Length: 160
Ligand SMILES: [Zn+2]
Image (cartoon, rainbow, N blue to C red):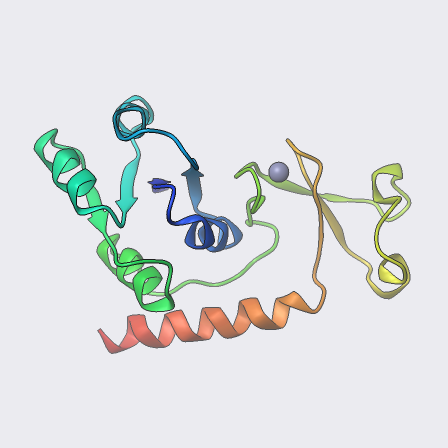
């Protein structure tokens, strides 16, 4: 399974990659040499929008992917560069969009579900919790946006 590290400008792409199950580190405010160290130490592919950092990584023999930003085209470009032909959202494989940890199914009467927005517990059956930061996930209205995004990415991948 591919392991990625995104630079501080690519937070929005990092959250999406995590939702689709990619092991994705993302640091905001870490300097370039620390980012590169982290890639080496953890065998991660660097994804960056910083040309200088990209060239620096290449000189060190690190695999890196240069993108323009966080757009859907950029995301498709990254996936294509990794040899990925299509993506499919599956909440059981998703990672926490905040911290990149795995999430697990949690029973509906769990204490950790207290404090969710009104009506959520009544309307949904399946809940998931981040094993690290405790963020709770459910397949609510945002799932439509995720699936639309998935469709957009896959059509770009198919066109290539
Ligand atoms: Zn988390």
